[in-house]
Structure formats: structure tokens, C-alpha cells
Amino acid sequence: MKILIVDDAKLIHFMVKKILNANDLTEIEYADAFDGEEGIEKAKSFQPDLILLDVVMPKKDGIEALKEIKEHNKAANVIMVSSLGTDEKVSEALKLGASAFIQKPFDDDELCTHVKNAK
Amino acid sequence: MAIKFFGHYLLDNNVLTAQQLTQAVEYQSLKNLTLGELAVREQLITMKDAQKINDKQRSLDKRFGEVSIALELLDEVQITMLLKIQKEEKVFFGEVLLLKEFINQETLDKELSTFEELQKIETVELDDTIEALDKDNIIKETIGVFQKLYSRIVHDHIKLIEINTTSNNASGIIALQKMRGDIHLNFAIQPEDTVALAISQKFLKTDFEKIDEMVIDIISEFVNVVLGNITVKLSKDGVRLDLTPPISIDSEDFKREEYISFLFSTTQGNLYLYLKV
Image (cartoon, rainbow over all chains, first blue to last red):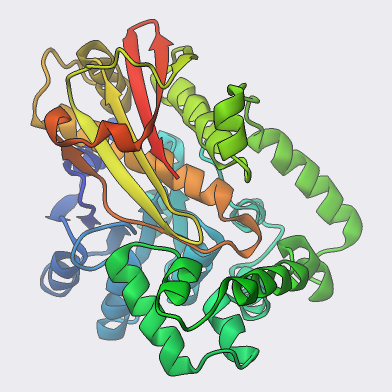
């Protein structure tokens, strides 16, 4: 399975990998992006099975990035992972085709369940 | 558990579908207009004027009312009238769900009561000076969510011990993030090194011995998580809010005098919270 993590906080990349690894989700190839623009580029080049996408990011935010990722590949499986789960952001993300919205701080189980569902 | 928007909670508990949530939010945002949209509808300004105010607002980091008065496009009386209309026309999320028949009154009452219990925050006691400044309870809600999330993430008690201390010459990392939109709030924290390490250890379940780049990154992300959850709490009922990415700044470059400071004690040490509303 290939997962692209798009988040400006390095620790989220580290944390996601650590949690998934500790929960026997080990056969995963990762790619990292640290802003929305890089996320869009890596979504094209890496062709991930799942994209974990933050909302508040420099250069291009997660909602704009989601829109462009979906324009390029309608079937892209994107889960938003953000602390900014306001009514507008959650519904906008779902409307644009995100499959779920995980709000930070998240539980290990919550993340693993979503990743297992995406496999 | 995070502070969730009621619709997100209903979605996660399969009470609403994603499509229903989207429809309800869209309906609500069509009804709950911004001051600019209202001013255009009431023919007080043109669309072009509204755009000009919005552009200026972004560059000056000021509220719509302040900018429109400064540009002499609206006056104080008109702003007061628009605020009154905005309040009167406001549609609450629960009302939309009933109107669209996505949920019945009994389910709404039941879910709302469970949701409110889950999201409950402790009441914060502030002194009279701050209380007078805090008309919309923004400071109280912010401190309540901050304390709740600190306890949940760090598994430690946190207690407010002093407000606007004069002896604050704390050094150490400052992580700052800004909330913009209908509410302007600058939120910054400055933990003592021992507290910064404790936050990092709990956040990443890894031991840290010194303040390094990763710890600084964690404190910024901690601020992002806390302020994101505060934003969710304050954004109920159609209030529109957004966040800038968090930044870490040197203590010397931080304009402490512009902020209200709150000193908290934890078992690991002290932490300053700075707010500018």
C-alpha cells in the first residue's frame, strides 16, 4: 500500500508512521509533502492508494489541494487530518470527495481504522 | 477526543450522511450572510465596494466594520443595523436539520444533550477587568478548551494562577497562531523547557532530553491542534473562521505588551498563554 502524507508539521509524518507501524500496518510505502503545492505534485508522481491531507498549510491549503488532486484524479482516496474541523471545512472536504475527516488530536485506533478501510 | 462541530459528531455517529451534512451546511451558509453580503443585499454598497473592503480587510488584518468605516463606504449606524439584521436572521444548525427533515426533534434533543456532555469544558474564573473585555466569552471559551486539551494530551493537571503578571520575563519557545474571519484572535504559548519536553513526550510517545527542532515543531503543532479545536468551538452557528499556519518566534521578537498573559502551573513547570482578541 502507498500512503502520501501532506502536512506542514514534520512530527505528524513521524507520528502517523509510528502509529501505523505499531499497529501492524507495516507493508506501507510512504511519500511526504509539507505544503499543498508539493502535495498536489506528489499525488501525481507517487500515485498513492491513500492521501492523508492537512487543512491549514502554507502555500496552498488542504481544501484547495484536495480540489486539484480530485480534478486530476477523481478516484484519489483522500482523508483529511486536521484540527480545523469546522462545519464549513468538514462539509466542503466531503463535498469535494474526501472520504473522511479525522480531527486532531486523533486516537491511534481512529487513524488505523481509516487506513485499514482504505486498503 | 477532539472538540467537534455538532454536524461532524452526527456524521461520525451515523445520524447524518455526508450528503445531508453538506446540504445542511450549504443551506445555513446561504441564510447566514456575512456583513458584506448583507450590505450588498440591503443596497448600502455595491459588490465592487464589498470586494474592495474585503481586499483591504485582508491586507490590514482588520474587521469588516472598521475597514468599511475607514473607507467611508458605511457608517457606524449602518454597521449596527447590519449586525442586528445578521443576528435576527441567523439560522441555527439544529433548525436546519429539522427544516430539511434530516432528523426529528426527539433525536435532535437526545444527540444534542450527549454532544454537549462530551464537549463540556470547565468554567474559567477571570478577574473583573478581563471579564469586562470578554463580552462574547471568547477568552473564557479559549482558556476552557486549552485547559481541556492540555490535560487530555499531556495527561497532567493545569491551573490558571495569574493574569497579566508584571514579572513576566520568561524565555523559551513561543508558538503563535492567528484566527481570522468573524473573530480575530492571536493565540500564543510559551512553555518552560520542562513543560515543552513533557508536551513533546506525550505527543509523540518518545523521550526528549533537550529542546531541538522536533520539540519546536511539536509545540507549534500543539498550538495548531488547540487553536483548531477552539476555532471549532467558536465557529458554531455560522460564525466563519479560518487559521493561518502556526509559527515559532523568539521571545525577544514577541510583542508581549499587546497581549493579555495568563500564567498556568502544571506539575512539570509553568506555561504562559498569550491572547489578543
